Image 1 (spheres, helix red, strand yellow):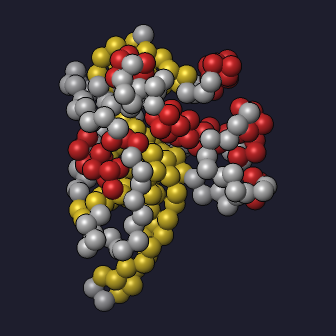
Image 2: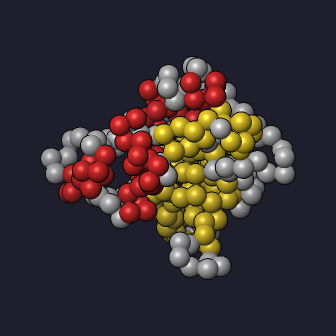
Image 3: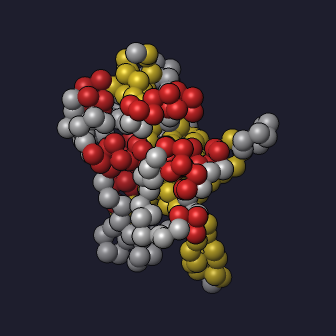
Length: 229
């Protein structure tokens, strides 16, 4: 056990080490760092949405860390399956996994300002925010990644994340066009399919807010009727 911030709910306290992939892969989890700290009851073992009780929670963790592994090791879906014996992403309808049009992004960084919750004309919750991400292998270079989250995910982000807080997110890189001041413009954004707390240690001794059960793993809503910004 160690003292830090729960990867799932953001609670600060004593955490248990959770190996994301099955016990048979524990040695690989250790080697590649595929493990997270979770608070014992509510997020790890006994809670309704705990990693060892809720399939949706377990699957969300597996999908997120598969993306992270593939990004870090420049691995294809087929490479991951060869290493870990299974693919946790929803790509079963592809006959050849190497033909999958790879568009999966994983980022870890800090919000540059407080996210704001808005609603589309059809009353879908949505939020857009920017994450400052240190560029790997380049000293003192930061990239600012625009992100968008929909539905329960948007509500979760706006409720529990503030400027400067570290966020872990993965999803699909998307583009959209919009008109501003009479001119057509193009935006490129990360659509966040998974969002987790990124701070492994508590900040300034302040406890993080706790989400209500299951918010992290609600199904995403499609943004098919335009963004209100």
